[in-house]
Image (cartoon, rainbow, N blue to C red):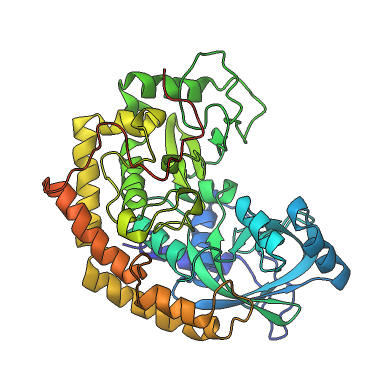
Amino acid sequence: MNRLTKLSIGLIFLLMISIFTISCDEEYIDTTETTLNEETSESDIIESDMIESESIIYPHDEVVEVNIDISDTNYQDLIENALDEKYYSCDITYNGYTLSNVAIRTKGNSSLRDVFNSGVDRFSYNIDLNYYENQDLFGIDKLILNNLFEDPTMMVEYFTYEALESLDVVSSRTTFVELYINGIYYGLYLSVEHVGNEFLDAYFGDSDGEMYKPEIGVGANLNYLTDYTDYNALINKNSDDMSNENIIELMERIESGENLDEIFNVESYLKYLAVSTYTVNLDSYQGGMFHNYYLYNYDGVFQWITWDINMAFNGFPGAAMPDSKAVQYLIDEPVVNSMSSYPLIETILANETYLELYHSYLQELITGYFDYATFEQRVLEVYELIDEYVANDTNSFYTYTEFQSAVLTSSSTSYSILQFVEERNLNVASQLSGDLPSTNSGLGNIVDGQKPNQPPRR
């Protein structure tokens, strides 16, 4: 069941409450002001915006046109100083709706550096619609445009989010974008829903809880040390309170393994872990980087929300291995090297009830979303959807021939996405049945001697 069908269809009529000025010459659209009254609650407006944004901002099975109008001076400065990730003023027309005086900056970590150092200007962008003025587009105030770096298929992130949705995991919506800058086609991008207050309000009905986005540092691997440790990777983005009392309790529960599900949504996390493990998504917690996730404390229970999954399907160069090895990735020690360095995964998979549930989600993936015949059809649908945009994309990191090969053909070490799924299905099924080992005596998956970035658990 997709997100749109989960929303009350009757809420469509609430759209009549807001008057939108839509003209053929793409005048400014104000979607910010809707008056609350007895018949219209704040939650009604949020759900109404969700319905509208589903069809206009994230229609998913369409390629929407986006044009950035930015002065030559601002654009040149943005390109020359891309590593600064500084905001610049511009106008944006997104799928026919224009907003003026919005903020644009480059985004990324190592990928931003790699693109900058290569001398090309195909950056990913973070576009803040209300940075300068109080405005949004159907409840969305920040747009993320990903440049499909390190993905010759152009589909990896798109499919991985679909796989998460197939298991009913709360995650970002996506749609492909043909990006123009000052009227010049810059290539095929992926628009990914930003995880911020609007996202939290839409999916949880609340955005006031503690919000963490750990990066490399003390606490990123959720390893409990002491109550007084400076967990510098765990900064609550929604408060100046630095006590971290609740997340420290979470780490203590992970340490002990007792009653973890009282303060952590284990079921949702296991769904995510099944998808991440199946797709060998190593630019993540389980790849030793301990990042690209959010923890949101909703009503006393922490929710795991994934982010930045563009290097799934063995696309992470920091843990390089041929696809022929990646499809054999262990499911019950789904980490790079020692399990003891990954306290959350070690604790959860040591619980027989959780392990069985996790296995059921893996089974659901190989017989559902990643069933080969079903997935092959889906790949061909998306291939047809984006083919002309890739063919015309002279700014791509890959040639059109490389795109075709990555989707449809394979070599001895580099599989097409179709062969990857075919081989991964067979391997995961064999691990689930016990015909192949799913563990490695606690040593995890040995990947070119890579060591996790955090110390092991005490």
